[in-house]
Image 1: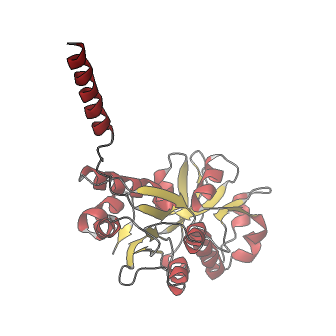
Image 2: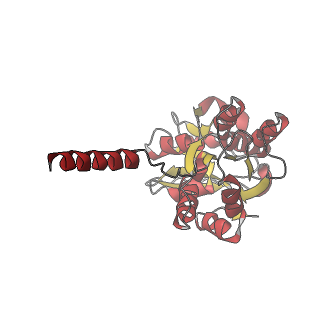
Length: 259
């Protein structure tokens, strides 16, 4: 009986050992998406909708398009890039980092001037505008970096078109992204800021003080494309979802125009 007990114990150990080494099916790698900072709420909603379809939820990395493009150019293993302007997507395309045939113009936006929620500031943004009066004696204008970040570049172009850039340029506080500029106004650090209409809509702490005329800045276009460094087998399907009627309806809910 002792011998039978030992044999039974060894058999159980063998089964336990075998089960310990039974291979587990690997989960497919979810797409890594580099997305412009202004897409935070909408892209998260799109990722949630994709996950509800039974797919692994995409991993999202938000920052200024300029910073994301530099990451992709330095070899970051990202699957998709959604830029807030065409310039940074063009840069990656020139470097041969965009999968041919996957680039589309996904979304559009508008440019607005914002103030803290409790402010009564209203500015008529037209030819000859001088924001110094609206800013006050020590006020600063919050913008994304106009030398590199799309929202800042659009804002500078609009003020140049209206003839107000030279007067206000020394008063600009530069944020690393459009959301950084938004935060400066939310916290009252700056009495006015230039952001996208969707950013103003996303914050309960600011209000729109003026709307830039559409012809005063280049069309705001968000191109999207797959990147050659990506490895997720789900990347192309998620890209197609973003471009689908259902995907674009999600972005439209957050105030983006769709193409």
